[in-house]
Length: 197
Ligand SMILES: C[S@@+](CC[C@H](N)C(=O)[O-])C[C@H]1O[C@@H](n2cnc3c(N)ncnc32)[C@H](O)[C@@H]1O
Image (cartoon, rainbow, N blue to C red; front, side, top):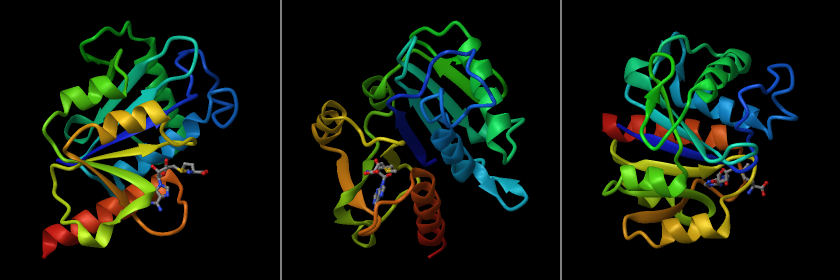
């Protein structure tokens, strides 16, 4: 099943964040919430074969990873506010190195990008980036792991981590810089079409 890994460099790890200020004091959690929406929401259905990992690196308690697993997911609605409440519940959990369940299909752990890549080891990594190989030249596969930045691009250290792995391909979706959630919609649409052929 395809997986997406999103890094939120400044996204807060405080479960007391305000649901009324998702675009401000949360460090742009709203960007990641839209990515969750794009990863799962179809018209009147949910993609059950997708996973998305949100890596939150903001204060006061980084790193925190939140995993949404389509197969088991419940209570996901199209609006950002209710997804933010699911993230809040996950952040309230006492997280350690191993995943703990928060609500159905949502898990949390104290992991950064390196920890998640370790866990997904062996699968091809498609690092989506404005400059890279054209996606039209790539045969996408259901086991691919797509890595993207959120409001900010990945840091040089995170980029070096990806580039240091033989299974990584830097891939562009086109010449314009896109919103991360739109990148997910495009990637899944291309995958849908390539699997149909
Ligand atoms: C909103 S962009 C990040 C900030 C953006 N680079 C800027 O200068 O404002 C979010 C992420 O989407 C991905 N992305 C954006 N445009 C893309 C493109 N044309 N091809 C592939 N990935 C893209 C990258 O992973 C990027 O880090």
